[in-house]
Image 1: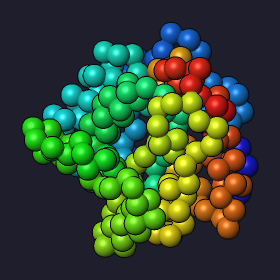
Image 2 (image 1 turned 90 degrees about the horizontal axis):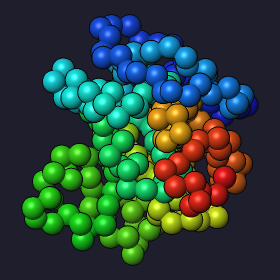
Image 3 (image 1 turned 90 degrees about the vertical axis):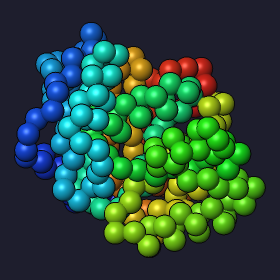
Amino acid sequence: MSSEGVVNGGAAEPTGRKLATLRPPSSAGRGDGAGRTDYHTPVPLPLLPPQVPSEGGPLSRRLGAWVLNRAGWRVAGNFPDLPKFVCIMAPHTSNWDFFVGVAVKYALGVRAVWIGKDSIFRWPIDGFLRGLGGIPVERGAPHAVVQQIADEFAARDQMIFALAPEGTRRRVERWRSGYWHVAHLAGVPIVPVGFDFALRTVFIGPPITTSDSIEADEKRLRDYVRGVVPKRPELYVP
């Protein structure tokens, strides 16, 4: 992958206490030249860099690591040492993406926010969803949502906004542009994350700054996740 548009802060591995080690998947790791590395031996979960928003404690991290271990999943790469960024998770074809993402959230101790239709934020799960970082929005006003999230970035010292750029689990030809407009308006980079169900690996990519071309930026982001195998490949348009 080209280094154009990549910001500094994600290359160095943080030091500190190691967390639980994940089992490697049964198949060989990636070597497709898309910025990923082959992984043939067990690797520890990455420790969050100091500037990345974090939450939880040893117990919740061990619980998340245990869930990933039991399911045979691991994490390749790490988040950049930045206090604010948009995190896109693609491709998104199944509700299983959410559960894998929650396990990774707890295992790494990362704090992120996400948006959902206000209709789902109802008793008895309202408190649970907000505890996971959920923010209720009215989907009928997309421009207002973009401004709302950009305002949240401006008001906070640290913030990760996580979302699926497809905006749906259905097969779509193009990503929705909200993720790009939020990042561009807020002046924060975009970090691509891919859930590979064939390798049972969550790939965390390098941060990319937005340019004046959403088409060019989307191509660079799609290039990173192009080889990722989703839960339902028939719903994914590379």
